[in-house]
Length: 279
Ligand code: PDD
Image (cartoon, rainbow, N blue to C red):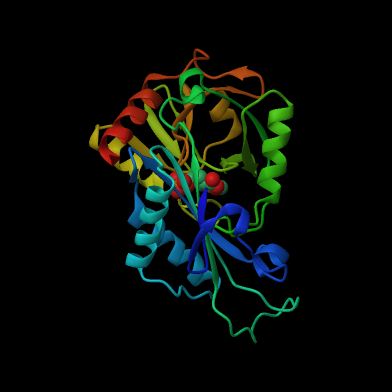
């Protein structure tokens, strides 16, 4: 693959980052993942707007204009002949001798981008539905900032896989916050779509906002509030959204079937509608 590191396109095995990079030493970095379908970027502007928000919340400054970031994304898609997959962008505060205090840092943020070719539409998870397990949400209190501090989610996702499941949904005070790397939803018997309201507890998903818009367009009722574990277990349907998974039905929670135990009608309709609207 050709990757992009601090102004240069080069083969991945020649890319280098300092061992003093704060992204490496302190997880002091933010990221975005943008889907590519048919060689085209999905929801690009929204991803860049969120990137800027994440940086602002962490007192980081972005040394690139939106046009530069778009040009780099497009160049990587082209150089790697990427038809379907993801573009990963990471911005780190940069390199400095190890010190918790970064107030004296003068250098510019570092930037890295790479592509991942991957079938996104023909997804087995979308076809058969996901099995999930539940775990306490022990992440820090600013899950709305898209930082690379992903160890807890990564540990829980691995635990889910080892337990024969596909993913984990995190819970705080008996209510679902979100998935390891996706937003979480249930559909009630009355066909109401319920998903946690935006706050510091969850990532403000770009796909979430697009899917909610599509749902309203299709006259579906959307309620933004936290739902309990009991509500999840007795829901008619459940699903997750993310840039890499679009809309993915959930058919099993902690070994208990959701609804009929197969992908539900609302989830399937939303997946199709989202893909139609966003392309
Ligand atoms: N994850 N919640 C969390 C914790 C996430 O990491 C993500 C995205 C989402 C969904 O956000 P969006 O719709 O903007 O992708 C929600 C990306 C895909 C990842 O880490 O790979």
